[in-house]
Amino acid sequence: MLKNQAENDTITAAIMNHTTRIPTAKARIGVFNAGFGRYWPQFPGLKEQLEAYRVEFEDKLREFDVEVVSAGLVDDVDSGRRAGDFFARENVDLIFCSVTTYVQSAFVLPVAQRGKAFIVLAGLQPTAAMNIETVTMFDQLAHDNSTSLPEIPYALKRAGLATDVIFGMLRDDPRAWTKIKEWTYAAKAARALRNARIGLLGHPLEGMLDMNVDPTSFTVAFGAHVEWIEMGDLKKRVDDATPMEVSSMIDRIEEFFAFPEPGSDSQIAGKVTNESLQMSARVAVGLEKLVADYKLDGLAHYYRGLNGNEDEQLIASMIVGASLLTASGIPVAGEGDLKNCVAMMMMDRIDSGGSFSELHPANFNEDFIFIGHDGPGHVAISSQQPQLRGLSLYHGKFGHGVSVEFKVKEGPITIAGLTVRENGKFALIAAEGESLDGPIPATGNTNTRCRFRPDMPTFVERWSESGSTHHCALGIGKQISTLRKIARLFDLEVQVVSE
Image 1: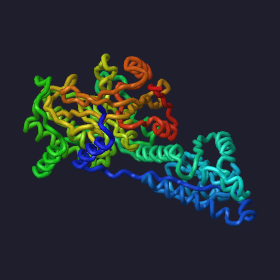
Image 2: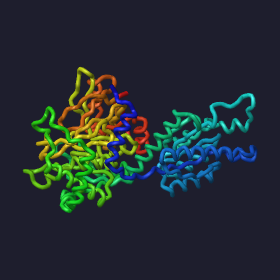
Image 3: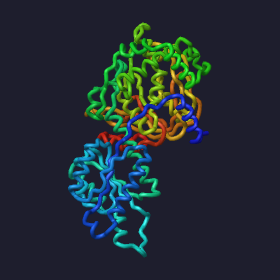
Image 4: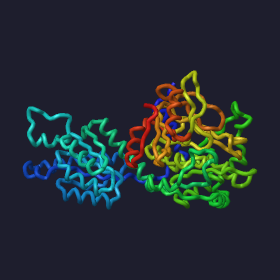
C-alpha cells in the first residue's frame, strides 16, 4: 500500500531536520502588462483597472518565492523599448507579458528583442464570463485578454524569437496557474545553471564512453563554469579537519542515518565500523570546506584508485558527505558524470530532488524495475530514514567504506537524463512513472521500485534506444512539463520516453 502524502511529507521533514539547505538564488521574473494607449482617453479608468490586474498578477507570482521585477505598463513602441532595456539591465531570467487587453504586437516585440530573456504571454481574464445583460465596451476591453494572443507570437516568430502562450483566468484557474508556476520553477533552474560553478574531481570512469564530455560545452550551452579540482585540493582540507569538526560531523551522521544489522548480503554489506565512520566524517568535513572554498554549486568525482593509497581511501569515503551535500542542494555525481550533475541540479531546483541513479535489476512478475546506484543519493526524498552500511568492496571499483541505502518515497516520479547528440548538442531524455512501496535489497545501494508505461520491458527498450546515458536523475512528482520549459530556455531537444 502506498504511503499517503502526509506521511511522506512527515518523513521528509524529519530527514531534513538533520541537514541545512544551502540558500539558492531566487529567479528574477520580469513583468509588464500590455495595453493600447488609444483606449485611455476613450475609456477613463480602464488603464488603472488593467494596472491593478497586473499588480494582482505580480502578487500571485511572489507566492512562488521569486523576485518580481516590474516594468509597469507598455502601451506604445517607446514604452516597449524602455521596458526591454530595463529588463536587460535587471538581468531577469524570464519575462511575463500580462496581456490585459488588446495590444498591438509592435509594442511587445521590442520588449522581447531588448529584454534578453524568454517571454511568456499570459492572457488572464479577470472573470469567467461577462454579464451579457449589463456588459459595456469598457467591460469587453477589460476582458480582451485573448484578442492579440495570435498576433504577438506571429511577430515574435518573424523576429526569430520563441514564446509560450497561457490563456486562462486571473483567479481560480489551477490549469493556468500551474503552467505559470512551472515557468517560475524553470526560471529558477535556469538561473542556477547560468551561474553555476561545478567541480570536476578526477575524471570520468574509464571505459564509460557515455560519460566523456567537453567541459567547455557546459559553458556554451548553459553558462555554467566547470572548475577542475585535484585530489590534493580535497586531501588538504580533509587533513586539516579538526577533532571537534570531525566529532560534530559524526553527531550529524548518527542523527541523520540509521545503522541496520547486516541483511542478505552480509558477506559484503556489514556493520559500519568506527574506523570507517571516522574516515567518512573527516572526508565529509573536507568536502564541505572544498565546496565553500571553491564556491561550488555541484561536484562530479571519480578516482580509479591504486593499492589502497591515500587518494583511494579519500574517494572511497566520500559517499556519506556527498549524500549530505546533495540533500542540501549541492548535487554530487559519481563516476565523473558532469552531465548527470547538471540533470540533478535541474531536478533539485524544481523541488523534485534528483538522485544519482541508473537502471538496476527488474521484476518481471510485478512489472517494475529497480532504479538506484551505489554511492550518493538525494536522501531528502527518501521514504525512510536513510541507512548506512559498511561495504567490504565497491563492485567494479577500488576501495571500501561506508555506503548509503534508501528508496525514494512512493508516488509519482520523474527520471531525467542529460545526453549529447551526434551533432554535439545537449538533449534531455525524460520519463514519468511511479515509485512503488516494498522492500529493497540490503546491499548498501540506493534502490527504488519503479513502474513506467506501457510496461517495464517496453520502457527499458525505449529508454535504452533514446540515446540517454546510463545515468539519470531520479526525482519525485510529475516534472516533464517543467523540464520542457527548462529546455526551451536553453534551446534543448526533449525526448519523452514514457509517452
